[in-house]
Image (cartoon, one colour):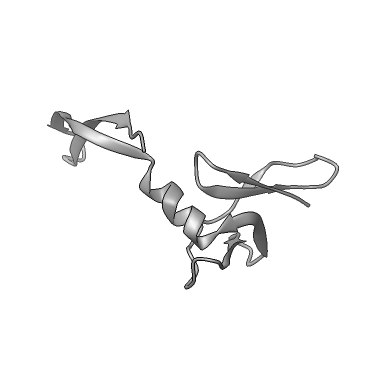
Length: 95
C-alpha cells in the first residue's frame, strides 16, 4: 500500500502499491495524548497506519488554521424537508 497525507482535508489516503483500485480515505484523524505522538490513521475496515512525519502537535496546528467565518450570507428552509439551510462566507485565515 501507498499512504499519503492530504494536508488540505486532514486525512490520510491509501492505494495499492501498483496504483490499481480507488484511493481510499481514512476516517478523520485524531490527535494523540502527547505533542510528540505520531498520528495513526484508521480506515473503516479496522486497518491502521502511522502517518509519517505527522505529530499530534502539527495536526492540532493544522486544525486551528483552516478558515475563518466572515458571516452568514443567507438562511432559508428546504421546501420539502423544512430543514433550515445556512450559507456562510469563509475566508482564508492567515497565521
